[in-house]
Length: 214
Image 1 (tube, rainbow, N blue to C red):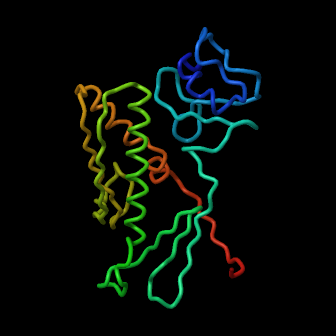
Image 2 (image 1 turned 90 degrees about the vertical axis):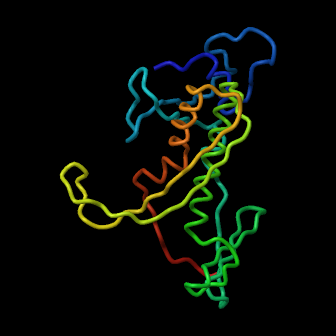
Image 3 (image 1 turned 30 degrees about the vertical axis):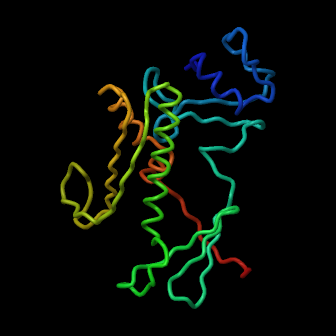
C-alpha cells in the first residue's frame, strides 16, 4: 500500500531531518535524504491493512521522534498519611487525585476513574481537532462529556461472555462550525479511533513490580 502524496508531506517533520522547502514542486517520494524509516498501515491486531480500508499508521526508525502518539515522560505518584490523597507529577505539571468523601476521601481532586475519563476525553478532542485541521474542515469548537458505569452482561452465544458486569464508558461529542452532515459523521467515526480509545479497547499488558522508595 502506498501513502498518498499529501500525507507524505505532512509526516515530513517526523521522518526526515532535511525537509522540503515551503515553496516548490511536491514530487512523490521527495521527502529529504534517506532516513531508513519503516512506515506501515495496519489493522487491528497488528496485521497489514487491506487496500482501501481504514488503518493505523506505524512509523519506526532512528529519526522518528516521540510526539502525540507516544509519550516519553514518566508519570509518578506519591501518597502519605493524608487518607487517599495522591500527588501526581508529569514533567513540570503537578496534579492530585483523591476519593469522594463518602468512600473515605476528602474530594481534594478527581478520583482515578475521573482521571481516566479525562485522558480519553482530552485525546478525543485533540484527535478531532488535528483531523479537522488536516482536512481543512470548518470545525469551531469540540465539547466532550464522559461518564462510566457498570452494566450487566447478558449470557448468550453471540457475545461469548458469561453473566456478570462490565465497565461501560459513555462519550458524548458535540461540535460546532459550518459542517456538513457527512463531515459530522466523519468526526464521530474518528472520535472512536483516538489513540487512548484504541488503547482502552485493546488488550493491554501491565507489569507491576516493587521498586526502591524515593
